Image 1 (cartoon, rainbow, N blue to C red):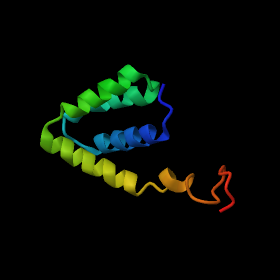
Image 2: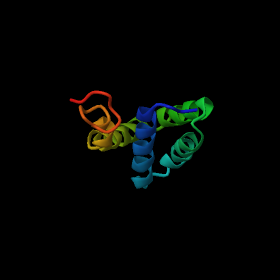
Image 3: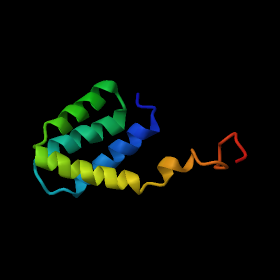
Image 4: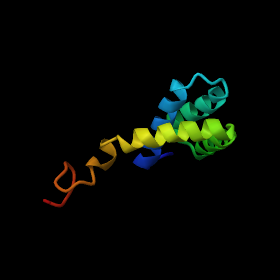
Length: 92
């Protein structure tokens, strides 16, 4: 089962980028990513990766650029690591 929040954030950003694409080549990859997010099972995570790797290079590069942009703008990804954030043990 997927326990790493970074994996979840990545797959969620990937899911959104694939959903925004109207390219039919994205459909199988989108289904694999949806399954991986639903189960978190190692075999489903691997299937999502293989599906992403099988996209045409130009499409994969475009999707990954969108994923990276989404993740770079996701402040929740760093919030828990900031000093004084809820749940941290450090006061600063």
